Image 1 (spheres, helix red, strand yellow):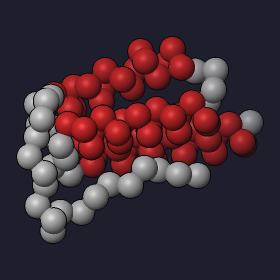
Image 2 (cartoon, one colour; image 1 turned 90 degrees about the vertical axis):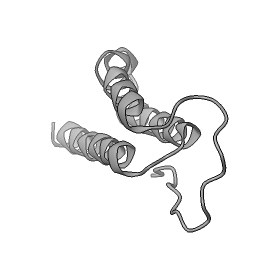
Image 3 (spheres, rainbow, N blue to C red; image 1 turned 180 degrees about the horizontal axis):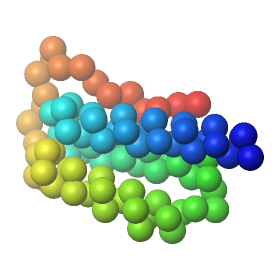
Image 4 (tube, rainbow, N blue to C red; image 1 turned 90 degrees about the horizontal axis):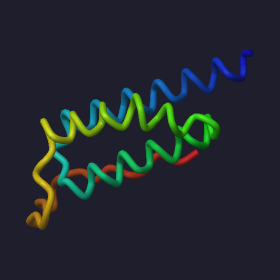
Length: 91
């Protein structure tokens, strides 16, 4: 049970960090999609049997945040070189 609680805490931290970066990171659509994809991969590493739960709960949350805070889909200009890049979350 402690292992599951640890994995749940890890997932909560990853989801919270992803949400914060989507809101505050001024990402392009492509960068945001890559970040959400990396978060999904990590969630499924932690809880491989819960893909449907991710799609039901977290995917709509990330879609809403992207719609509100991230640029529109399609080609976007290159970001200025001074802007920091978001690296995928790796274990």
